[in-house]
Image (tube, rainbow, N blue to C red; front, side, top):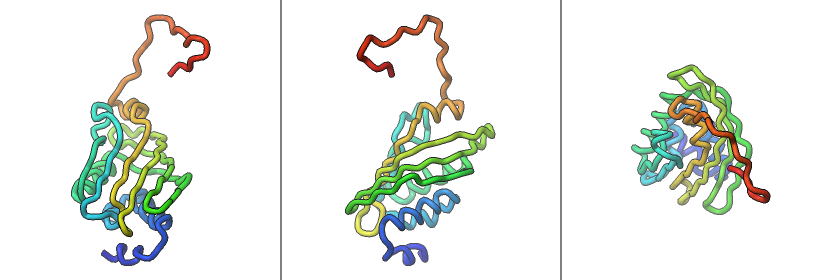
Length: 160
């Protein structure tokens, strides 16, 4: 692929910027060209709350996950807060404003991705995000109503 040739010699941080730009515009073919054939893509979360959660292996699994996301969501805004690269490891902290296509609802999302390179290609990505808030926003979960009075946490303990 042409993109693969163009990105071979650039720094890993720049390669990540190219990849996230491709992701934000829905160019899954360009994004997949940055991954190894046997890559692993994990969206951390409960599959009851998010059917997209779980491990995908190989380019076919990666493309399936990316295509599924872009069928459900339209990215309205995208901001990379920070990229840190050290040796073959990286993390990317980012925010996005998403349109959930089935309801038309706009959702604010924040994520942190842990990335491992093997050579010049991405070997694995683990995506961390607030799956409970996303499930509520997409209608996959409802907020429980509280019938009983709320009890404060004992002194010195933090309620969660």
